[in-house]
Amino acid sequence: MPTKLKTWAMFACLSTLMLTAAPALAEMSATELAKIAQNPVGNLISVPFQNNTNLNYGPENKTQNVLNIQPVIPVHVNSDWNIITRTIVPVISQPALSPTDDRTNGIGDTVFTAFLSPANPGSWIWGAGPVLQLPTNNDKKLGNKNYGMGLSGVLLHLDKGNPWVYGALVNNVWSLSSDKRGGAYNNGLIQPFLNYNFHGGAYLTSSPILTVDWKAESGDKWTVPLGGGVGKIFHFGKLPVNSSLAAYYNVVRPDYGPNWQIRAQLQLMFPK
Image 1 (cartoon, rainbow, N blue to C red):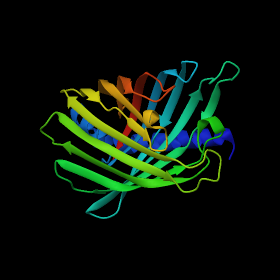
Image 2 (cartoon, one colour):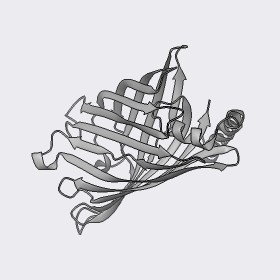
Image 3 (spheres, rainbow, N blue to C red):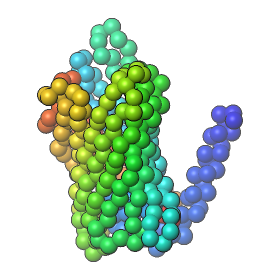
């Protein structure tokens, strides 16, 4: 399909989603939308664009930028169960790692998760399922050529009358082979999140992403950030958009890991 035709097709699809979502949006307050956006396994079609700027990265102390495009699509199984699919496609700008090196731009490895979650949960909500890593990178500096598979789970507390939303998401991915470029890997992720919601759709948030490379040397396994930020629901026409800005300092990091991360996110929301 020609590039222009693809662009028009994507625009038409987005426009259809916006029109479809409009009736449901009229019944939701900004505060309710903010809390729905904070639920990783909510029954909500959304397209978050999460930009992570990592400062003082690598031996040259340069800036790395990772834009995660991560559409979330729920699949209705029956009256009791949903499957919430989340795909993360990273667009990476990798700085030079030596004085003679050049910056590398491209696509990293795609991560796909499918959470099985109750369709009618109470104030405690959970989801669990497989996670896959796909070698979609276009350069050896941006990823690993071995496929990976693992498990992921999320547990959170969300009560309609309570301004707090809190919980955690965890996963671990093991490479399925080790004979391709990059070799074997065994990587874990823990993302606790804590949000306080105000009337009108504004909120305070902290959702640091802790990562661990189990195959690294003992002092280089963990990245542990601390920090937080603010968020706000606004509308683009009738389409609600969840926006947030946060900063995290890595109190534990491997050699040549970044010391600061600035995270900015826009999340297009299409309630079903």
